[in-house]
Image 1: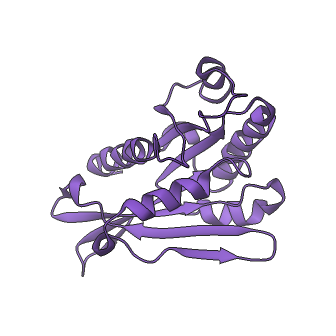
Image 2: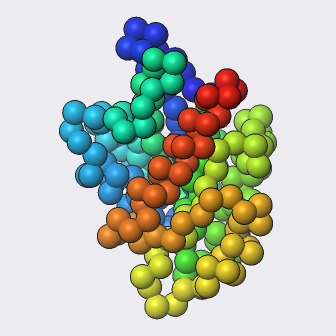
Length: 195
């Protein structure tokens, strides 16, 4: 649900990085933040309690151009990974324009990936969204580790609708910007349609 700021001639869009605990959501955001020019980004804010952390920041990608004379500013959010922070996850999904599901490629994390993806679908429905109808991409993170599941199996389990997906290693930045650009592009296509 993008927000238009007529004074600054900007369309503000919200991208949420969703996935199980310790899958690399925060690492994705930190990498993007570090590599974004200082004059194109706002402050990175970490809302931390004793038990959970949510990160967010906004940036204005200069290369993506304008829509009807408006620049597009993206606000990137992570959700707490652990299941018992469901209320926070639901709140962060409010007004979402696009979702990046970050999956942990390690064999022992497959159940957590499946559980988190199901939780994402349920929480989106409660907010009035359908995952199959909003801009959405999947990132298979931690591809550099030895005990990983094949991309084919990850696709079968986590991407049955064949949305754009990317292999990544967020700690080195591999696949991070490709993932972000893909979801941003889908959001811009949606905006141009006038949704």
